[in-house]
Amino acid sequence: MNNILKYIFVFLLLICLILVRAFQTDLFYDPFIVYFKNDYLHLPFPEYKFGKLFLSFVFRYLINFIISVGIIYLLFQKKYLKFSIRFYAIAFLVLLLLFFIALQFSSNYLFLFYVRRFLIQPLFVLVLIPAFYYQNRNL
Image 1 (cartoon, rainbow, N blue to C red):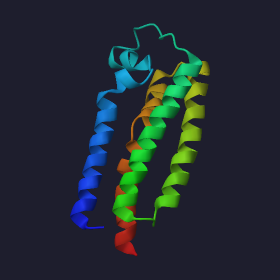
Image 2 (cartoon, rainbow, N blue to C red; image 1 turned 90 degrees about the vertical axis):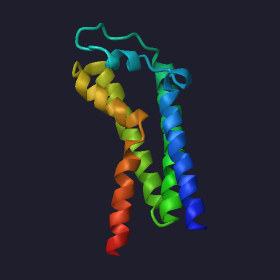
Image 3 (cartoon, helix red, strand yellow; image 1 turned 45 degrees about the horizontal axis):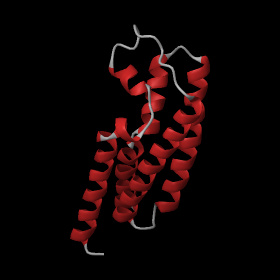
């Protein structure tokens, strides 16, 4: 694939990630968006529907996963694709488990905030791309 075309597609996928973030309140059920935007230490904990929240997180993570893996594929071809898919799958299972355990049993809202952030935002792609680039440069 032509390098210019490849970077255009990467740019378009980055725009897709931005659009997911911009329309998060319309696309996904997440009562914690408003809760964590305000002074959450003084607000009552929001009511939530477990099943709806779970499906929303799965759907959002899946969208971010597909876009992020697409970016990684375009930048590095198949070299790191299998690792990325495994990494995202394991991270999803661990983070989702941690989130719902913290939601049920913990009063540490900061921990809940950061685990939720890793679930709903494409932060892993910001770590994996430089790591893969560095790995490529040293091979």
